[in-house]
Length: 221
Ligand code: AMP
Image 1 (cartoon, helix red, strand yellow):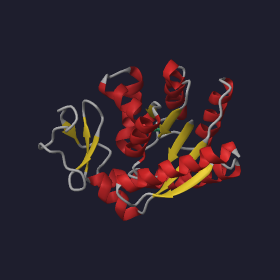
Image 2: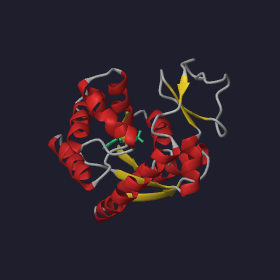
Image 3: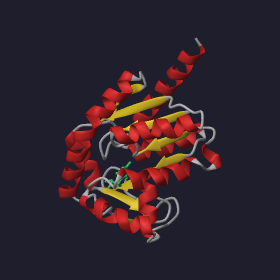
């Protein structure tokens, strides 16, 4: 299956994509994670991307698309993927369709994680990320067992530089401008599925899995 998760920053795309990928045994591709890896490794791409990321702005399509194309090329993606963070605009949505078409593939579902603004701000300002394995925690909702250390691998937790309130507001502004077009795009292709995502991660994942099971059933009829 090829699924993309859409939704505002803080909708839980990363958390849900990771959980879904484990359940469905598919690779999780996150353009945000791939960019942050490039920043950490101080690659040429990482250096170019960082200034945009720090401002909460989108990294130019060309850079992100090249990076995604390389990832899709890899063998583990043949059987499908859970993609989060891409597409962010219509140009990227069309590019994704073209990249898949070149490989005789098609997207199955675009799932929109509907989330309200107070929930977004609360989630993002408290988010902690593991510097080693990328796992997400939250200062209040999901605190690590040991202070600022990852439960899974013991790596150091940090707050993303773009998770400050003023950067979050900028990211939301960018997001709102682009998302309505994406929603129209995938609705017209009859691929859009909406899901309320203000709840805790567990119930949202259950609803997501039900939605995917219904979709798979509908293919059998
Ligand atoms: P995320 O982890 O998805 O919240 O992304 C973090 C930051 O990475 C965003 O604020 C953008 O600066 C950049 N980014 C991630 N994915 C994309 C994309 N598809 N297009 C442009 N910029 C992106």
